[in-house]
Image (cartoon, rainbow, N blue to C red):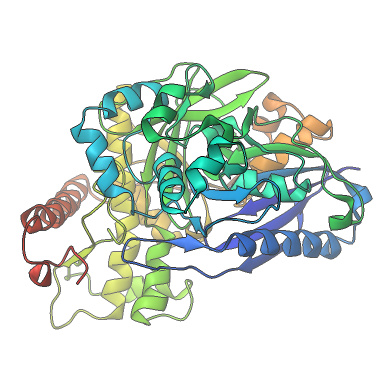
Length: 511
């Protein structure tokens, strides 16, 4: 039993990867599922899709590897974090579609929390901001919207969970209702300093604590899978939210080490060690990982739209058929056109935290075409990453050249990574193993199972594929970033001016 099965349940697809005893991926299976947009700013998933695609990809990956369940030493799970589910403990049936992390339906309630002066208390306890991004206000919406849910939750009849909890529940046949510290830290109701659910905030949100899962370390016993699923029971030994799993997979174990993951969104984490650093620049203080009862913290910057902007080029505008086309188009773009895309399709994340403004494009000309739009889409990811790095540098008092370890699907584009290095002024390092999120989950489970080495040896195994050094002239970098900042300011100004305006003439509101 030297292999580990990693489950990577993401925003647009579920994947399963089998890693061998040397921590190398030997088989992968992936399956996309439907995205549901019932209203502007609302994003939902069918819980059944999350579960069924997970099971089918796990079975497919084991089969592709030529293995059976008896060859698997353990399962590691990593997942889209703030996506929120509520289900019946007796039947296991969900009461509603999953509300996805991108969903903004609780923006009004979050504004009420801020106006009532609650955000300072929430931030002090959780490290987060009163924003609809996080699970707590989504759970409140479910409890108050579904008939009878509030009362049933108080009686202990319902279970809340992020996607990891939903998968653990189903994998164990309803025997285990648990989560790990990193996912709990993203709910807005978990005290990251005391390591427990915060009753004070639950009361504020009218959330009965009976609905909450048990919180465990990232490497822990999360139960055994039902034997009927894979032919034999398998131990679930590691769990971490996707960004924390990527931090682990990138071996960012020392304070000051930084990684950035480019999936549907972009998330940069800076390890701050055992100190929970309070950001003065609207970053999040969060848990990087918790092992053997000891918590390591991080500063995090969250961008809601990264890889999703490429999906928009494909599905929304129809100017590409596949993501790989964007690099070729970007290289052909007219260098004299300075088109700026602010992809605030579901609002802006860090460091702006504006849930209601919407996307905008600046600098369009008669000559603007697919190539210029593709370049602007890819550049928007670099610009947003610089926003995060600027905030992290200010919070930590960092100066000089930074090094950014990157992973995720977009990092396969050399053009995008070079622009990232150019606009941030940081050295960008791409590892040989791009599946760092799944690798992090696999390592958690593997070292718990005794088949993988400890943290120090694992860190030594990190290997560089390619490094991208900044090549853009300093003056050009400053000018281009200043143009981006003006575009963001203009986007938010339009939103601000639209408050109270006739909705038919307000581009930031649904008509």
